[in-house]
Length: 186
Image (cartoon, rainbow, N blue to C red):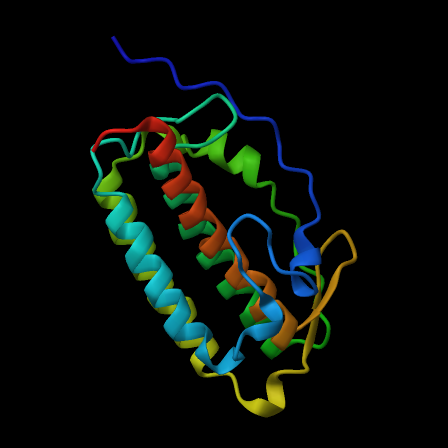
């Protein structure tokens, strides 16, 4: 008998672009303090941290009804790395591209994040982190002002895109750590 997948979470409809101007009160990320040339290194560090958290025996447990498990966050961050790499490449290749919409909540359900294996997710997360880290490291100073737009109209330069992007994986490491605290034990 196959276990029932957990119910979907309430969709996140927040516009997180505010993190470009303000410190995140939850995870502490401050985009204004980021040296954009360090994004590649930061991505590798946060991916290694999240990969390590996925080795925890509680990785498939949701700490509460409003929060994903570590595995689900790992899948999401892996997919964010892939998506943002595609978007970064578009910004570097085209003039002011419009990004296709991505529904992260629909992807979580369609790809059944909750049932994925933590060790495989960790491997894929590290591999996708390396790809986007290398992509950001290849950006030249002259390319930092190239532009792109989300489907909701939010505009970015490569510089602001990097600052915005890095908040997501950092915040989700914090989410997982908070979830493990809530679950207790080891």
